[in-house]
Length: 458
Image (tube, rainbow, N blue to C red):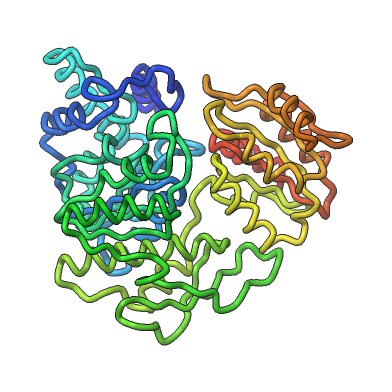
């Protein structure tokens, strides 16, 4: 425990763009891949340990990464998953065979990565960031665990992301749906953001794309053509149709989906444990990536039986429609941009009869488009509680309340402003009737606060 705590303290001493975007610097010496490549070279290039699937995009990256990893594991592969952000513990980001990295292993890999980072800093005067060191820890753990395959999610963007090493042995690269987010870093248009995400494409890796807005699709297609890639598209090459809608108020009931691939329609529907119509697209992107992975290795594509076994019991990701209580429903979701909020609201309306009796607890980072998120959420709520997240980037809930009033979205009894998240969540739970629904959303940090309070809601 002491060694693990020391490792976390060592990480937190480094520049962390997730918590403090103001310290961002673009290019070599700041946000980029050159320093990461030098760091991994000092560690013996652990990122080369196994073939990989690489995933970028705005929404659904974690879900696609987990669904692809499950498909790979269906053929008895030992699979490493690297995802972000985390909800309860940073160790959630590094997974092998469904288990997060242990504290002892984390501390050991941190020690090796930190020593290499200090040596590199002495040689170049260029310190590694929090995310770069964490990524090195993941690759070291995958190498030590002797994984057969890796499913890697980018942290931010793609072109300059620390995971986007030139010699990463990626056999397939996927782009999830693109929407406006991180405009200060990636560009103000969908086309510009798509260009950054497309930076993970490479000639040796098959390309698979989710459905995209026209501007993003055009940019992705152009980049694929420059690399002589013939991308597969969700909605054209990989199609899922909901075969039967699960009953309401049964979030544990799987969806049953009919699947069509380039090889034809599957003979029977398969189960998908996760709720939400958006998960059908995520599943098809994961399927296309794993089919491409196997094709690069000369193996047959995924079978319906493999998909059914992999997805029918897929463990959920923390902070994604977490159901933490019933009577009333207590739900936490880390949706933190307008597109993710739209998908969340659609899922709530599809699966919960209490969606129209919602108490909303909301917090956001100050650089997110919280106004667009609230335009969708506030009209559905009978009560709104604004709070803060434990981050230097937290929004000002007072500013949110003033804006809500200016927009004419405030009504009697809301918004309440309770800056301490735990107090806000406890207040919301007391204010929600047994036949209602309490939703905490806007940030993964807030979702983590709810999960830590789960015993209070059961």
